[in-house]
Amino acid sequence: MEAGPAKVAAAGRAAAGLRGRDGEGRLEDGRGAPVRFSIITQRGHTVRERSVAFLQDQFRRAGVQADIYDLTAHNASIELGYYTASLDGQKKSAAPDRCSAFVATGSWTRDGQPVIAHNNWSGYLEGARWNIIFDIRPERGHRILMDGFPGFIHSGDDFGINSAGLAITETTITAFHGFDPEGVAEFARARQAMQYASSIDEFAAFMIRGNNGGYANAWLVADVRRNEIARLELGLKNVILERTRDGYFSGANFPANPRLAAEETTFPVNDPSVSANARRARWEQLLAEYRGRIGLEEAKRFLADHYDTFEKKDASPNERTLCGHVDLSPRGMKPWQNEFGPAGAVQAKAADAGMIRRMELEAAMGHPCGIGFRADEHLARYPQFAWMKPLLRDLPAHPWTRFRAG
Image 1 (tube, rainbow, N blue to C red):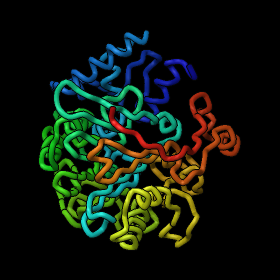
Image 2: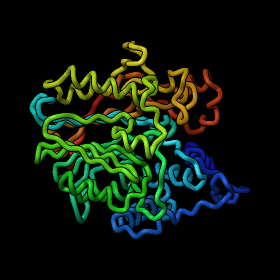
Image 3: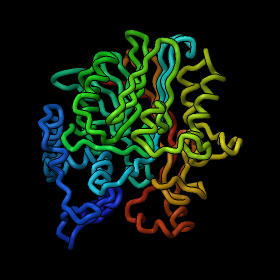
Image 4: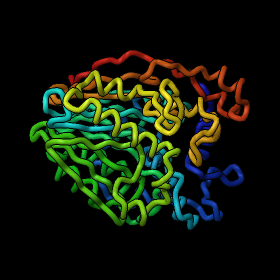
């Protein structure tokens, strides 16, 4: 074990913006009020309850005692910051600009059928551990092939395929604010949609029902049975479902809908130097340039792209490039990461229509561009991150590998 439970818990609290009180393990928000995890567990949700209970049993068999509430809070860790921001009366959460993705079909792709791809932007501390491919055959619903994080019942960064012919991914909406404490946790809705949805309409219905505003995303979906793609921009007040059989949708953490951007975010839509805007511009360039030629190999190259649209420089890996390297940026990626923060693209996935039908995907651990990260070297150069030393791992780049259900 790399570090004791107390250090792991402290790192988790810091990432969620929470703090302990007097060593008691009681979590408080910024006003000193106790954080109640019942905000996540109070609503009955069959998929969540069964999945978490199963996970608890598997932990027990492996000799690890994990409380069901610990596992539930762990699964909801991505959305806890939205809840605590609402408790503190903040006008925005510190929702990070993480992940680059696209889906395309029709005249935009090589064979006229859907292609989908996504890279996961995370802190390297947790991102180096985002290295699992789950093949799940549930008693009810569809079989699932998805990437994920240890202890999750959902994907988390959200790239998955189900046996109904759906491929699903997303990117976070930056600077989003709003949270409904009476809603259903995002991780539960995401797992339910992945397991039970057979169409774009069903996927949207699962995600909208009980929406709590936590981990607000722009969801990209491909339905290979109907040769249709969609983007579900899921705000709390504004929900926008776009769909097409000939076109593309991209994601880079920008709010696409102007009303959602104005009413539910503090996102600077007109600043081209911001990571999300720079990456949006690059998606538009690449997808237009490769129209009619987009396939699996092109998708993989897109995810490794290092062109900075703001500085108009190629081979310039930083926080503005589709393959993110915040650790190489003197600007960082605030408020998520300070200057040279150890974060960026930690893995990537892609699939074309034939692969989706066969329940296959290709994945690459580490930066898809091939650049590795050395933890000791980075900490020696930037000692302000020395607190991460017990947990921060190297992040070597691995080749693309194909995974198949079964």
